[in-house]
Length: 199
Image 1 (cartoon, rainbow, N blue to C red):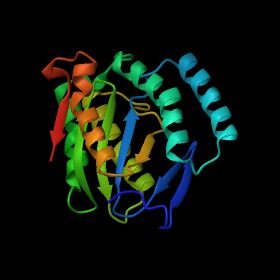
Image 2: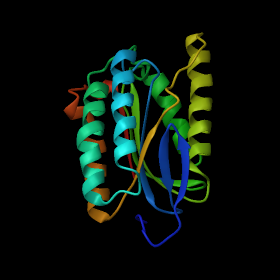
Image 3: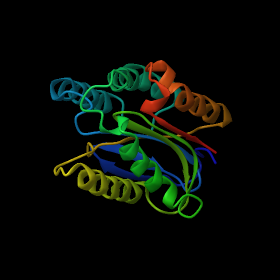
């Protein structure tokens, strides 16, 4: 259920290195195309690229913690500011995403919890044998098509990039669940602006 350093790791690259092991919990975040202004994003990516060059994976827990303090916290602050059009504030758009995630729940994966915020999604899930990149492509493709059709729009809905982290232990699981549950409170969102699903 958690990262096992002795077991084989599957690693694929889509801008960032993504680690996978079968049947372990993974925390995933993805966001709408306009959720972070391009100048901020460009600078953040450049700094992150330099970090990866100086700190090649695999990381120990201390290095991983430092990475998240340096980069993930900053990014989460931007997301919680509610930048961009926030198309997921619309309940029908958010429900399209929720229905898509739940469609293969208990078949291809086991969802522990998720939150659909106005401009991003957090998901805590245990994958079976379907690669994460294939699931991400399907989730983004289906939701993009349905939301764009509903809004009579075209063009990209989601950023191509996504962020994921394999959970290390039960404490990490509890901390991640709590983070998902408390995310709207941290962003000062009313109940109408998000969808929270917990097992």
